[in-house]
Image (cartoon, rainbow, N blue to C red):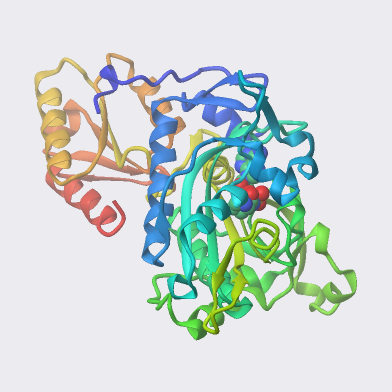
Length: 446
Ligand code: P5A
């Protein structure tokens, strides 16, 4: 993309309404625009990152054999009356009447709708296990929407629903989701720690939240510092293997890590004092096993091996897709702006032309741009007439992890400059070497 043809409305000043750094930087970098409290338009740069995060989530879900689909945002209240949650959910649910005076709602989650789909089409235990998921907008009329996309009213969630014959099978599905989540967050450059949590309006006793440690997080958390040393990495895993998924689950949840709702001071005191930590965290996902809470009242049964109908054991598993943008920025920025991890960056590399209009500099930039694109990479070329300082400030603000700077002086010696946004270190090299280095960095990521 050439910057002169893009829509990147960056702000020079700090917007006064933003209280935390991710909100401020997303507004300043022209990623989002508020349309009403807790409701945002995704401007092109923000939309690009949102799509990247969605893609990672899709890939990791499908790697584990989970099946993508799409349910609507608007739901009929009838199903929620069957489960008993229409009254129980409270004022967070946005209730709407249609012209026939029927009760509708903007879905805050989809347990009822998926249970209805399941009961309409699945009748035998032989069709299990099954995991269906979608990535869809949700609405929760939060009392205090704030911090930009971190606590929105309209937000994008990946929600997956598991159907199993027995509790044991359902717990395997739970563990399998834990593995997919660990992989997904790591690909986004994040460390998200599974912590024992409270299940709230979704229900059930088994639940873990995934928390990214950050001072601006809304949850208070307590943990054994050893847990921050764990990494999933690129290990191979067989998602159908109960033992392998169980082993990962145990590895990542056996140390003390809890949110304040489930914090147990006596248990925490057993952690060696030098490893006890209390901090704040951003909840970027949550997994639940709730058994037959929905299948029983809604009659979602399958014929078991003995021919008798049994209600299915269910779980639901959520990732805060839009919230993740805020979480990533909270975890990765400096005083100049965002620093995108390579896995989610909106563009792979920025090209800064120090002397737009200079034949040699323009030609070198065009050539770089073309060769990066030919390798399947996505560069952002600042081909505007802005002065160098302004170009650098914009690149630093929008946080592309790599920048190639091209100017007449370097070109005289046949070199351009490659700069890392994270370390600030620059290296001179030929344009060809710069292209090769960028290609190498993104091999296996892009
Ligand atoms: C699990 C999937 C559920 O709703 N039902 C379907 C279950 N879980 S949850 O924990 O309530 O939400 C899942 C994730 O969504 C994100 N999230 C939000 N993101 C932005 N703004 C909000 N107001 C908001 N509320 C929830 C969180 O990341 C949460 O973990």
